[in-house]
Length: 245
Image (tube, rainbow, N blue to C red; front, side):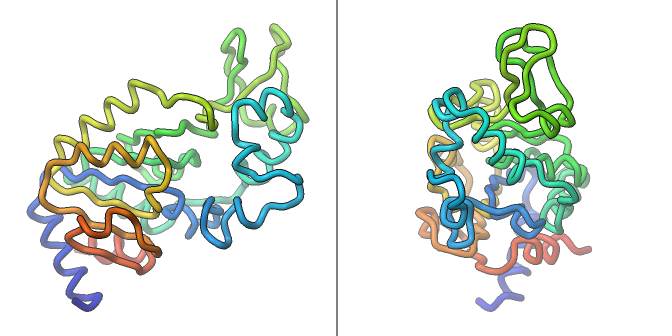
């Protein structure tokens, strides 16, 4: 099928469905100017100035032993200003408002889905919007993170950390269980902007029991053979075109 035929088919699937779940990754936000991780232009292949792979920088042990380097990297690549939602974020918020989309399950930490208007967003890897003391759990505004080389708690002096799940850390159990429940109960699963190479998050898709899977990703994934429709085009364009009235 050509693009228009696939878009028309996606419109039909959306119209017929009552419990759509969207499962997304870094590719959802690249059209907003946020770097992804594993593509040729992603963080893991382009960031060389620290002398260590960014994947290691984003680990629990590295954060504990090298908080200054971690925060320099974190501020530069995860606290970017003027990053705004793109057409994909707005299209998903539109589907939720119409009562079609029951949940956005995201591996991103950038809060762009909520900024676009989505209400039920399950952030598997946490969020860069929340920072707290590791000891007393006092919350701190992002301004403190931006202004201190290694932000420390004003009350107890311990290090402040972002509420993101680093490598070597477990995902939040409540968020995971809720995401699995939504996937299991959905009648249409749309997967977008993810290589499905990050586990355990990608493994949750096996709980989907519906008939139709729509995959929107620029490169091949392990789920391609199970997809009803595959789009290699811009995720913003695909979702925007599919939700036009």
